Amino acid sequence: MKAISLMYHDVVSRDQRDSSGFPGADAALYKIAPDRFRRHVESIRRRTLATPSTDLDQNSNDRTPLFITFDDGGISAFTTIAGILEEAGWRGLFFVTAGCVGQRSFMTPDHIRELHRRGHIIGSHSLSHPLQMSSCTREEMIEEWSESVTILSEILGDRVRVASVPGGHYSKQVGQTAAQSGIEILFTSEPTVSANVVDGCIVLGRYVIQRWTSPETAAAIAAGKLAPRLRHTIFWNTKKGLKAVAGNYYAKARKSSLVSAVERASGE
Image (tube, rainbow, N blue to C red; front, side, top):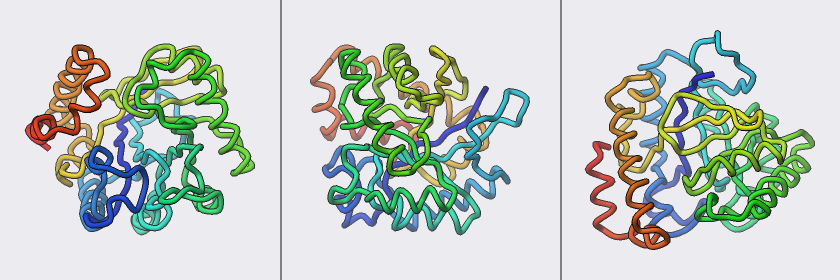
């Protein structure tokens, strides 16, 4: 299976960025204003002439699906994002941090059930959103996945079988423990259209959308164009190198103006 997947987070106005999802300057890098998000949707629709998929059972003979995904489970998923998608006739995949359900700036169980009723896909984004999932012990990973799946499945009255990795830190063990917890499809932050299978779990990459990503760039990626995908790959591999060298200090460095400037220079 191959897939093109875009990774969004919250959609909130610039002066209300802490009103949905996780607070702070680091999280704000991924929060897009509502009018800009509408332009993303319009550009993607014009460029691809395709409806994003919510079919998690597509086989390799089908046309390469396009998935529009949203991480964290912030309240804007319910108040803003779903409505904009539905105006276009689209549905999205919403990955919820289960331990934050019902907290300030996050969706409640009723919100999650309503999105599910309206045809959107609800998945796990772990229990507590560890900053470095791949650094957790195997037992911690299993708890993050299994507890989150249990909580969300009970809310929905339906089995949750899809998830996304928080923080962008994936490893084979992250995939193995997701599979052990009943997750059948796992989205990472790796910028690729290719899939691999880990213990029966399909692992798919995604292209990260940040607040300065232009509608045209998002649409070009969604349409499968090589140039913007290649830029993402180069930038992603550069960041992986920085993380490997800096270790735990990278999380702090990312908030600095230097790293922000490097991210803007990636062509977005």
